[in-house]
Amino acid sequence: MNRRKVIGWSTGVGAIVVVSIGTLAAIPSGGQKPAQIPIPGSATTALPQLQKLGPDGQIPRNVAETVLLPVGMVPTGYKNLNPQGTTFDGYVLYRSTMTPPQVLAFFKAALPDAGWHLYNASVTKGQDVILASKAGSDGFYWEVGIKDPFPSGRSRSNLQLRVIQISFS
Image (spheres, rainbow, N blue to C red):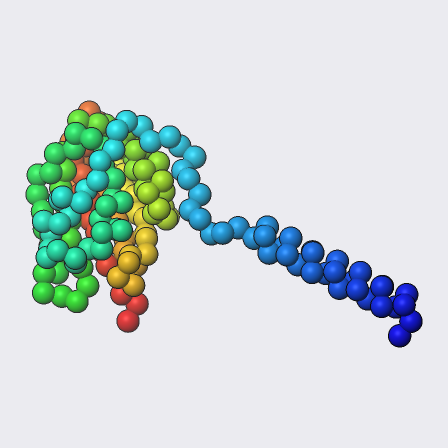
């Protein structure tokens, strides 16, 4: 080969390598995008209440620690709906002095900030319903649902926070 062809091929291959590296560097890392809404008020984790639903380790810590609640919510009841089953399903009831719209705004901001994929935030039959999912460290997907099962007017909220282990088998 003559010298011009070698230089031409070398330059072309070099350009392809540079463009390829630049393209790979521009690919997003897949990190969770922070919520666009600031979290209204202070937050705490629901971990202590969720641990009362079942044996330790039943809900992975990376799931239980990231279910955030507004500070001041008072747990009023617990229920494990599948205590002997292979998949987890349970809920905690809470009372809050926040209005339902305030609670909805809190969870719409807090769940995505904690790494949850928020896929439903709606009002159905007068009740606020929020659904989000997250991959657990146990290899399962988990879903958290928040709704007001006992509407008490617009001045305060009675919430059901339900956590379900999703099995695709």
